Every structure is written in C-alpha cells, then in structure tokens.
Amino acid sequence: MIATRLLVGLPSAVESIAVRLCSTALPLRDIKPKSQHNRPSHFVDWKRVKVIAGAGGDGCISFAHLFCNPNGGPDGGDGGNGGHIIFQATETVTSLAHVPSTIFGDGGMRGFGKDMHGRCGEHTVVQILRSHHKG
Image 1: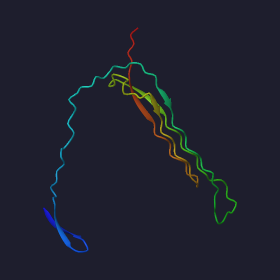
Image 2: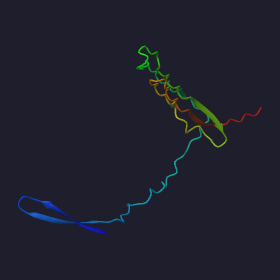
Image 3: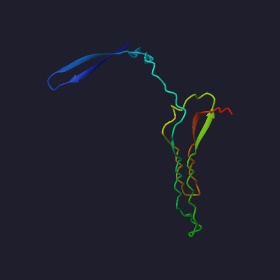
Image 4: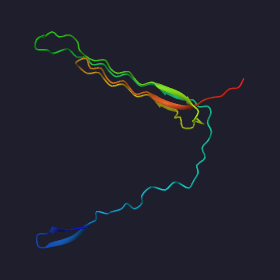
C-alpha cells in the first residue's frame, strides 16, 4: 500500500488531503454469471438470404517520375478483388438460425503508385447444415 499526500492550494489556505493507493485493488465481480433463462432456439431449415459480394478496390492512376526519364510511362497499381461469399455444408450445424438475412463480402483495397496492387478482400465463409435426402 502506497500513501501519498496531495496539496490543494487556495490563495488563503493550503489543505492537504491524504490519498491511499492500493495495488491490490480487485474488481467488483470477476466475470458476469451465465443467465438463468434458457432462451428457446427455433429450428430453421429454409431461409432467404441476400448475398452481396465485396466490391473490388479502385485502381491508381499514376505515372513514373524518374530523374533519368522525364516521360515515364504509367505505373499505377490495380485494385484488389472483392471477397467471395462461400457457403460450406458441415455436419456440426443443425439449423440456419445463425445465418443473417444479408451477408456482405469484404471489399478490396485500392491500388497505389509504383505498380503496387491493392490487397484482395477476405472471403466470408458461412457454415450451413448439410441436407440429407432419401430417395
């Protein structure tokens, strides 16, 4: 435990306030307890989903600037490709309740000068249930 004194100055009087700094301070509670309410999860086997793939990045319009070549050619980089939306059928998923109604793909980054291309967008993978048809 560290004890320190703070001086609060007023024009006519000086007051001192003792403050104790505790290095063993504990939070009020460690973790939030789990809710006692069991929320019902509904089984969803059919769902309409709007899928929007990621937009590609913008290309860069740039020309080479070299001291030895004043009429340098274009050297702008292409924009990165947008990310795909991939639906992956697995055995572990039992319902489509977790799938959002609209899924957006990650966009690509823009290009830069000196022929630097933009980064491609990350692919979005959605886990869905595998259907079993007999017949």
